[in-house]
Amino acid sequence: MGPITIPYDDFEKLIADRARRYFRAVGYLASHCDNKRFLTRPLLGELLSQAAQIEELLDSYGARNNFRWARFRSLTAAIKLFANVSYELFHIQHSIATYRLLGVKQDFSRSTEGALDFAESILLEAANRLLAEAEKLHLPVPEVLEQESFFAEKLPDGRLPHDLARRKIEAVSKTISLLATAFLNLAAESRKELPGKKTGSKAALYELTGPISEEKLRSLELRFHNLQSLYDTYVSTTETEVFDNDLPILRGHISVVLHLLRTARDFAHYYERHASPAVQESITTQEVEHGHEIHTTPADEKTDPKQKRLVEPEALLDTLVDYCISFTCQFLARAELLCREMLKRYTEIGTIEVSIPQYRGFHVRPSTLISKLVLHYGSEIKMKLGEEVYDAASPLELFRANEQINAHKRRSLAQEIICLDLIASGGGDKDLRMIVRAVIITLAERGKIIVYEQPLKIEEKAPQPDAKLIEQITDEIAKLQATGKIDIGTDIRAVFTGDKRALEDIELLAENGYGENNFGSNISLPEQLTYLRQ
Image (tube, rainbow, N blue to C red):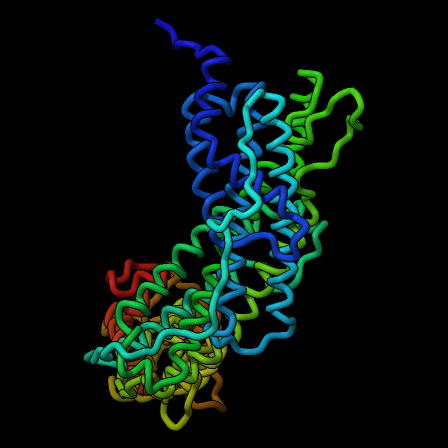
């Protein structure tokens, strides 16, 4: 038995009965637009709640795919989305003072006001179009009362006193260091996902599915929500929060970024679902097939058939990029500096001594992993090798340490050759190549050298009578090392100083060969270090 089709008359009665509160809120919005600020949070909450319920009801009956009801459903979805956006923007606007935000280039309060004006204008237009569509569908719209006290929002000044007992937490330093580190890592990841500079609307129009897609924004939003929960669970209402003024400031920056990302997510959703070039082309095709418009103002014989869109894509992207994304990046940058200062105060400093990569030294993989590890914790780590000190957060600094390592290798190699009396055993051979090969084989058997090239090709050369044989041999071996045919082992140890949390991971990384075997091939890392492979 196939699906049952509901008669249009029955469906109209169902929606008319269920949408009374919805139409009252929409009608109130449309009739009070002359007020300077006609939106209130009670009104937005009612619009959001009722639109969500009606949208769900419409979807359960397949209105999304029905030509008569598709437009009504689309306008309801738009009201729900922009009511939610407006609510988020209202929250930001009312919370700016309590967020204690650090200064940024633009006037954030004024920009928030502009974004709210944009969302309000769309919401008002959607309300007017929905009422017109309801009339077309023969849906009764209840009369709007002049005094709807339910939607009023009169807020007295002041706040309640903070007289609740403060909590005491153990391991304050560890908790705050964890929080600051988590923020720094999330901020760094956000920079990869979001545009690093202001993007013109034309460019953003075609690149939205890349750097600032709804999917990526939703993922970042969830992670900042988790970060806010971490703060509220372990730091909020504690004695530490009272005595450290930076903590509430950090909480404010986490919150404002979270709400900006939620707003950006909804803007991106609307663009991708309703306003992108591909979607508009699809809508135009449907309109041609059915002979009239779906997503614009209902057109009768007297109306211009080329009605403007409910939301202009470029205006939407301007707000998304220039407000949501721009201020997100700016507040992240300011809070990063704050977190680094906090880590200096709360980080426990320690020192460890570990072996360096035995054969290949600090080449690309070990240096990159150490740098990534240090940046993950966000605090300063120094590596001391001999008398030289290096910044462990910089791969280039660690590369520079190889000069000292290779010099030590050559000195140690010469001493090893002399101690093992390897020249005497090969001294009768007139061919320097044979002497070098014999020395390398002996040293490889003892684990002092590792050979990458098999068979090993050595340049044919006679010993120079005016030079010491030991120097000629070490020079030839150094050439083979420089060309990557062999490598010389070393037992040098480096001293790392800094954040104890980072030092624990460096020690574990060293125990696991800095992520590679003796031949430089990648190996798996312990679960504690899996973040280094992400």
